[in-house]
Length: 126
Figure 1: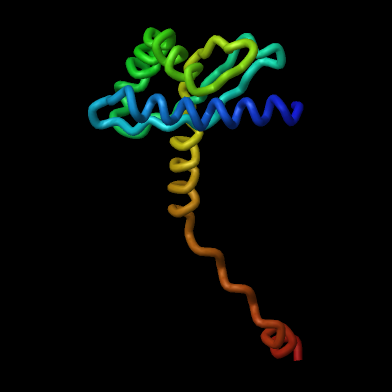
Figure 2 (figure 1 turned 30 degrees about the horizontal axis):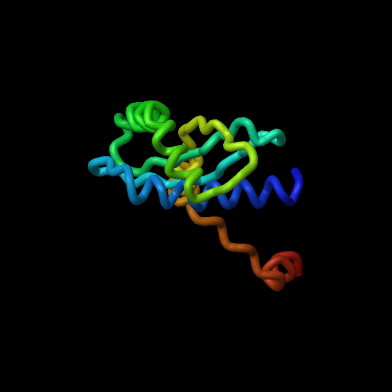
């Protein structure tokens, strides 16, 4: 990926986070923009959004964001000036949930057995 595309992705991520924080509220839910991936031709972009809160509302939140994407894009492109303004598609990012479940599995493992001391084996043989 080119440096320019990386900069565009980071800029859009930062500004999209600000637009969503200021203009869109969801009861009992924290919304975070994890990543924005823009196509090389700058025509389309996927915004990966993490949702912390009520698990049953995730699909509804993504659906609402995609329905409101015209207004969201209008606010975003007032702040970000590009030759082509990508069409944004919001997608649910479940990486945090997977990470939490993995940490829980690791925490539930029994502690490792202690290493035998080097002098203990020589004493048994002798």
